[in-house]
Length: 427
Image (cartoon, rainbow, N blue to C red):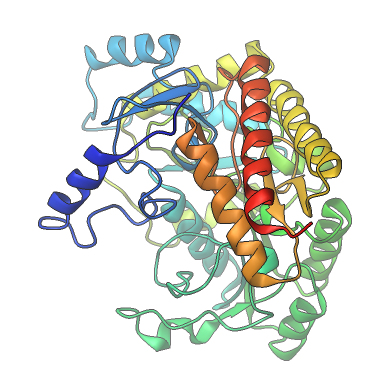
């Protein structure tokens, strides 16, 4: 199979720059300049097609929301039926209560829940609830929690934990007043002395500690989360797990269910409704009730299409044991990539980011130029051979992915690794 070209994508991107600042949505940039698609026309199951007619096995899955597969029939059918009943109603739809009860049933920390539309809205709501409950203002954060003012990172900050600079206060972003960040502290989840220092130096002032579990790629996941929980409770601080990515994937109840480490509040979104926009904050009743003391609202929060999509998605994940499927294929992909690296004597390691349902491959050459050259060549060739693997973001697996998809991916990766090694590694 010849290498894909992306001529139409490139042409459309140039036209888009005339009407859209930068040409694309923030996360939908070209993965490798000139060597990856920009415009996708359709998706079906685990595959998608771009404007040039190229077909891909997709392990990016719109950065996580596609958990069952593109155009999943049962979800689409449920949505079509609901369209006939109304999309957004004046008051609360009964479906809302059904979904809230389901979330409380499957997520360990959940005693009450609220609905939102995006992950950024959910994390921001969780912080506001924690502040209203504690009467404190300061927050310690770790990881990507969205684009809202309190948590947004500077454009130059990498999202890859092992390539990020050590502990620092969140960097300044144009358009965000510096005063907003005065109560926000960033800690390094792989060095908890940084969190301890923040809690001690700001004694009785920290409202919440929030962490995205995928940050913990360099530390024992369960032990570290247990230590964070112990520290927060010792200082009477609300502990929030940002399970926007890990919820419904690591297990139905997220990392907390899988590891048995239960936070006070949790945010979920991406895997919740197979691509329909919805999010939730769930948690302990005494904390969640602070929702009524503060101001959190959203005209589109009770929109019925996303709610019925979420109910149907969760039902399918339960029926077909979705998390077990993600674990099985994730482990197969990770094992296969590590075997290739070992057999080919390439300095690379495949791991879960943070666990097997969210795999990733990183190159470990000490020479930075060599590492970047091999990484670029590898991901360029893989993408131009029809496999969408993100070079700097964890990958995802859907219920529609098959063992055949993984086997074909490994074959393509072997070829790409061979070409990259021959081009850059001296014998």
